[in-house]
Each structure stands twice: as C-alpha cells, then as structure tokens.
Amino acid sequence: MSDNAFSKLSRRGFLACSAAALSQPALAQTADTTEIEQDITTVSRRNISSFRSLAWQPYFSSLKNGAILVDTTSRALHYWSEDESIYKLYPTSVPLTEDLTRLGRTSIIRKVEGPSWAPTPAMKIRNPEWPDFVGPGPDNPLGTHALYLSWQYYRIHGTHDTRKIGRRSSNGCIGLYNEHIAELFSLAKVGTQVLLI
Image (cartoon, rainbow, N blue to C red; front, side, top):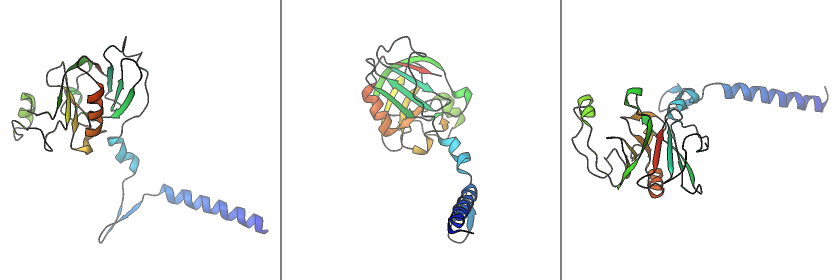
C-alpha cells in the first residue's frame, strides 16, 4: 500500500471515528460519578426562540406610533419604529398555558421604570402563598421596566429570573431580559400598537 493510499485511509478512518464519537452522548464528570448528559436538542427546545426576521406588512396596516409583534409560538418579540429606521428582535417568555394566553391587538397605555407588582385575583387563587405586593427591586417579577397594555393585567416587562426567557413560564405577560426591556422601553411609546399572535 502506498503512503498516499495509507494517508487517505487514515483520514477516512479519522473522520468516521470522529463522526461516531460526536453522535454519542457527552459524559459529564462529577465529584464521584460519571453521568450521561441529555441530548442538548431535547433540552434546548424548551428554552429557545426562533430568531427569524419578519416584515411588518402582513401584521399591521401602518407603523403609526411604532409596532410590536409578539409571536407566542416562536417566543420572539419584533419591534419596528414608525419611520422603519429601527427593527429589533428579542427572545421572550410566554404564558405557561393556552388559557393564560391572550392573543389579538392592543397598545401600550403606560410605561413604568421600576414597576411594583401585585398578583391578580386569579393568581392569588392559584398561588395563595404569594405576597399581596412586591415593590421595585431584585425580587420584583416585572424586572426593571414594564410596558402596560390596554388589556387589564397584561404587560410586556423585564425579569430578574433569566431562566424564564425562551420558555412557557409566565402567568400571561410577555417577559424580556432586563437589558432588552430597557432598550424597548426607550424605543416604544404610549400609543405603540401591539399584536400578539
């Protein structure tokens, strides 16, 4: 066998072995055990947003006052400025269940930096142990900023619990990382149109 044939065989063998190794579950070493990690695709499906740019025209007749589209399926929020000079795409948390999800058209009616929070009557029934009121700060479930919608109890807000983003984890609101809600807060205004699909 020539050196060239041997080198081709070695490369093929190396590639075949590498592909086989990559297809196997990863081993994670802990203090005194070896555990098989779960396939990352099954884990990440619960905590991922579909980052796909969208055009505003299928969803809005105009961009008057700017527009926000929340896609609860892909768990992404799209923002377009009125003059179309700014387009933003953010990962979000969405409601836990379909019955907590409200879809349709609304608008921003109020903006609050450092919001306080109180559970809705329905939340208190489901979770009687929850506090009646939480002021601004690191324990507040609304994070650093909140955009209040015309639907009672519904908001687009931040969260201090970053594990929630990309998941079905809210009681009805749309959550963003605090740095993203701060940016969106500066861009959106009272009157910005909002569509949840």
